[in-house]
Length: 286
Image 1 (spheres, rainbow, N blue to C red):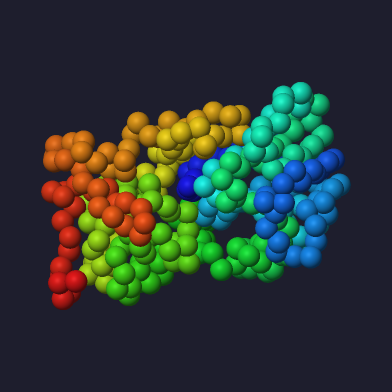
Image 2 (tube, rainbow, N blue to C red):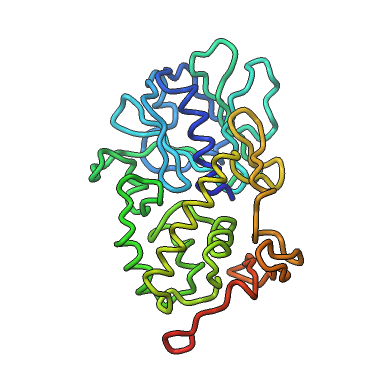
């Protein structure tokens, strides 16, 4: 599933090309693309001007000159691309939008149909209006109002494994399986260590590692393991070649040369170095 770096790459590409444009046509080709959040149909965006495109964690929204927002989530395989108008529609195209460009249009393509676009009402927050559905989602580490001290305190109260805490979008948003593994490898923290057993310095190191890893990933356009994640120009990200833990089980750790291990985690996997990332047992040996 695309995580913060991939979604931010898409957001930047869309913002560059769509900000200031007006929606001329909005064609829903499959109802699988529509997540019902209000009584307003997606066609309500017709004629709206796109003022900005913003992100919280893994979620995008189009800021319109309306009293509602157009939201989007890439799901497992969603793609938001700007295609040539004369290019044949991909068989998994769910939405096509004409934003007034003579050569290109916007297309939402989703093979596995877990992604969606929807209209949502706006609610007031401490930094302006946001879609109501996003109010429950925690700020991500790149948000100007991200309160690191508050997040550290909340994480250290949890008796859950630290990787599970990192993936909780109500605690901190934007992190998925890939970047959790990468940040924990960089911070030298075992993914099964319970958050309550970590010191304030440990958790701060993890959050610093999250930002460092994600910044590098954004610079490389995100991580693409197949052709399901692409940017708005149809290009893959290149951070895969820089991964230190995720997907490298059986390969040597780039720090100590010990073999990277993979263990089951919530119907997925965790990847870590058993020598560099030793499980903490400071508070009760959990």
